[in-house]
Length: 558
Image 1: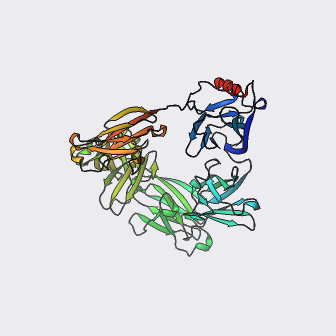
Image 2 (image 1 turned 180 degrees about the vertical axis):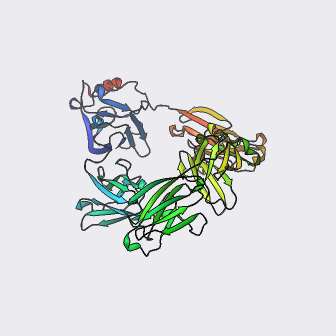
Image 3 (image 1 turned 120 degrees about the horizontal axis):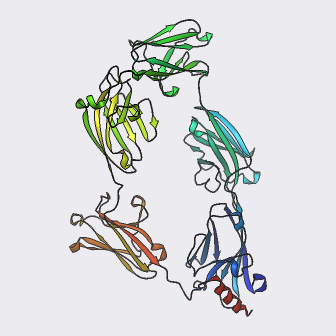
């Protein structure tokens, strides 16, 4: 096997490249003027027959991709899905008569996940927490940042905050250069804030420096939590203890899933009565229990919500009188709702004044079984269903997310009450197929040639602006017909169509295009075009690396 040690060559400077395991690394090598049409390649170790990884005359594979930007005289090789075995010495080569030109490359690979040492930090729901991140003194003026997760390769792009912004919503960053630490503070903590975080310091060369923290947010909860069960139509009593020093404080009870947003229960209602039993506890009696009384209650003796000064109750109401919808549907109003697959849809259920505190729900089919109930007003979220009860407008709204064809059918807006439940509306939900095109055209051409894309449009759009954009999705495609570009739009009024001519076709022109005459993207008013571009190789291509190695040796007379 022939190696670089046996051959004559011209060697340029050493390039250092860094990458993360499982990610990609780009090796960019420049070359001199006049070598634009020469073949370039990347090889590893001693550049023997089996060490040549890819040439510009070859088709890109799944591991190695090569692109020669002749205008800047830089060819770039991308190595995908890095493994630790990929680390080592590489050579960028420019093939020419006599001595080839080489640039040495050193590739270093580190694990993407971080880190072996993790700082544990704890906080309390609705409170605040500070995470302290140390760094070396030589990085005092470098960019600092923090992200969620433990992947170093994407941390800066997904940063929650950087030292350039210092304040972002609930998150602030303070850099103390005297102690060589920066501190990230998170306010109004939620349980969802728990998880892994990375502190990052950007470096001028090489990979960034990181330290890791694990944040645990504990639920702000009570000293005592009780489960109470009552029967529909019967009374129930909740007993609430409190510290002796609060004996002269105002006592009250509120209802809601979270203490921070619970609604105070008015004691002058006929069914709610508060009694001071002793200097250590008070009671609240609810008479004639209704299904809507079920839920979470909080009783306390001071407004600051100090831990230990209140009690949490989970009240369940045994419903003994519910009938099937088969006999009650006659008076229900019919509502027709339509949505599209993959999107969200809202179902709005009106109810009468006086039922603000009653439980509402949405059910499917005939609602004769509990399993038919999809979600209740006591549930903010359940699977793909979300609720919002606007008690001022007397409307209960259920959002169904991620629609599928199986969601189509009949639903009922229900309200739980003593005796028979009330059903205010029958809902017929229609789910339409995903938004798609009327016509898809497939076409192809060759690099350097000219191609014309034809786009029909409705006659009534003859005065509309016509456009052609490129991108995998119509909602994010980029307009390509701009002044001075290789794309030229011409309209043919007589045939209700327009065309776009692309000159000097390039390999990068391949992809998905959308042409249309309706800015609202109405179905039928546009055409989807899939363009493929055949590559035309410059000079005489080499079919295999071994042939290249043979020519390589012939040049040196070996």
